[in-house]
Image (cartoon, rainbow, N blue to C red; front, side):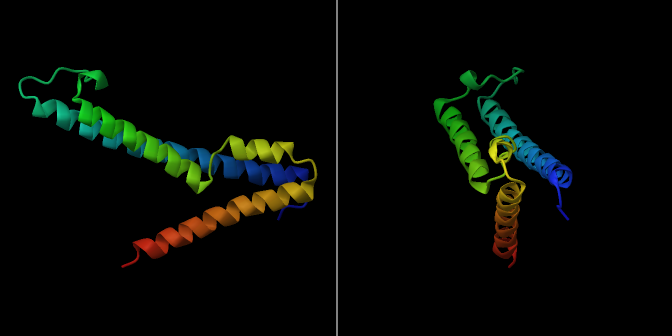
Length: 124
């Protein structure tokens, strides 16, 4: 239970670590997809695979697809509302503990709603 500044910042720190973990997991997943598409495109050229594969060596349609994937993921990440730095700037800028708790509660509630919707979407 959050009863003072110390317990608030302790909880906020845990939440921020979770946000960073989610961000890193999404980054790793995207990087995996980008690598797969990059290697696949490079192998379609035929002949020996020249490593490292540079994006500028790929066909323009593949480069555009990769750029769009990265843009889409960035937009999706912003949309889920778990940006670990900007949201915490808001918490730092909020002066009163009760106002910080309200803002923090909204952040957690938003993520809970998103996860519940994701569960219902994934359920057959």
